[in-house]
Image 1 (cartoon, rainbow, N blue to C red):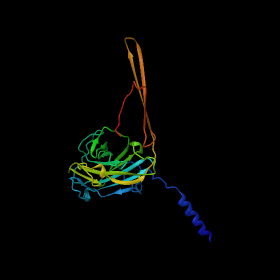
Image 2: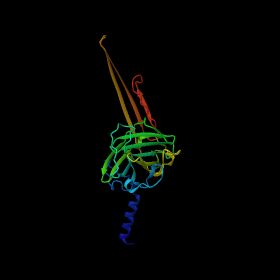
Image 3: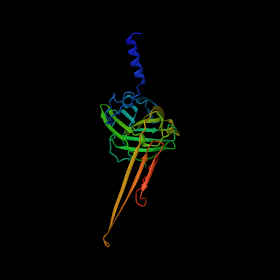
Image 4: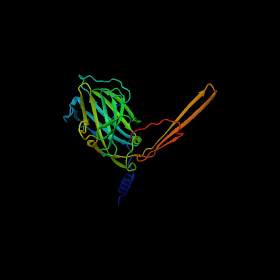
Length: 276
């Protein structure tokens, strides 16, 4: 057998044995870089859901979305075109402020079973909202999560980018290498009262979360540890005595399946409840 053929077979064997490399991290800056999103899931079939016609988005209102699974979390980008003759509503709002502004939504059902979805909103001005969606279309904004976002204009519209960490919500089978999630994207033009979405799902129908688009993705492990100390002091000027109290809340999430909470000195502290 010729030596060159033997070497070729050796190199092919080594390449076959190399583990699959995880997706490279993307930079969440609102500036869409096609190279960063190479290999991402790409969605282009946005349709009108307000009004609820199902018609394809016109070219001057079109949108496209990308989704990429990375070790840091699920990364998303939505690029939306905006007609030059239509005013863009960029009013600044506080977090979770319910105001008529141009915006984009990414919603995720991590278990793809239609039970619970999570909504992550970025406005054209760069403000954010996040909500839990239960019972198909019941939105609850009493949930604030830590996630990364950015928005930037381009010639013809604007781009929003998200990075949603794996530890953001409870999910079943978090130790598997692959998982199926369900996703939904939309963009809202306030001046025209239009909303274009992918897939063709609407919260004005009896089914909403159950109609999200299912995607199989790589899954990565993530842990979260949060320590929240509390200290308070008081002074009795009559008795000239001082008193100090301290407490600590410990939150540990070793995986998407389990989370633990511990309070030290429970007679003193602050309680915060986030709906999962």
